[in-house]
Image (cartoon, rainbow, N blue to C red; front, side, top):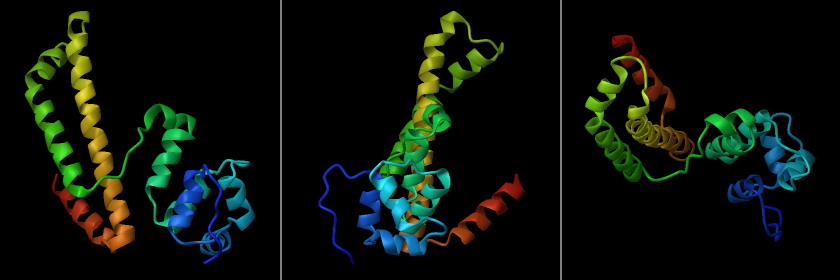
Length: 174
């Protein structure tokens, strides 16, 4: 491996490349259409990466969370609609998901009352905001689980094809 950079304030792209043990030149060889010079410009923030660049780097560095970072920080649409998801371990993700679902389940009757007339009236806003907040937390936990699956597939050879086949079987049963 080449010499490790001693530069302070490395951005996420450089950090992840170095954690993968790759030089810019080697990373460039492993990616389609991204030169070592382009990687350097992205790492030194003299050029913004394109979504294509980010997908290539995420796959090469085995860091699917790089895509979430880009969407939640660099993309105008993602900035509005894509929350930042932090990688956690499976037990923490599962516990967070179950806790969130339990909290939402306790609010089910209130959701029904609010939705019954198809209008959210001023006196229902506070409860609706709470329900929406709790649902957002569940959604974030699910996103974390999906990111964990992608990362585990990269690191531990999780058979994504088999997982997706099983999910498709479940869809066809609905």
